[in-house]
Image 1: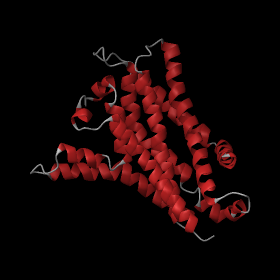
Image 2: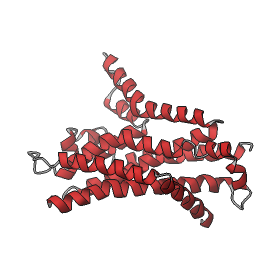
Image 3: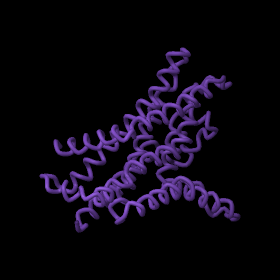
Image 4: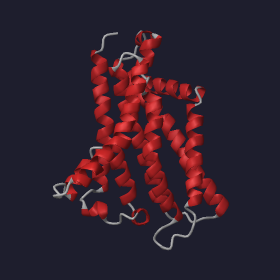
Length: 275
């Protein structure tokens, strides 16, 4: 555990030195503050708070932004070390290959958690103190922040898998962009395209729900837009998740599987890779 923490702190220091942490905090903070201000207008429903509306807006945009930040952090985590020749040097120390992967992962998750906590959390704290707005809706907002971190962890793990499979950094960049496009854009387009062409209604609600769980971004979206009554009402999907049989525990479990599976695959590939 001590070695994991040493490696994690190295990644965290690199993140501060390369301005990654500062850039992510600024981007997420501006985004959260802007959308929170826009969501402070009257809603017409006593069950929908200002923070509920912010959760809807931020969850919708985080689907695009959080995976991008995570992939940019992780795509060269392994291939970059190989290209610079530092991987061989690192392995001369008393450290195992699995410790390298998990130490880097812990460090990148720490970078993302700091960015989310200070960016999303700081913006809402400032808005609450300045405007004196109600704190109703904080549980939903906290859930959005926590699940955003898990979503980021999913794409950090996917970025590691790309990074350990390819031989060149340029290839890793292209593969990371491809992953982002597939999970954030193309999968939803294909899914809704299939629904549009399904004239005989062969795709029922249960099958559609299962198909949405194939994508971690869709799982994240459903989790945040359906777990709390005020948020689901603000999003206009009240009761949809419960009717489809998608519990919060199931959605969280699916997201955790999306973290663990790529990490395990990365460990297996890295263990067998020749240096």
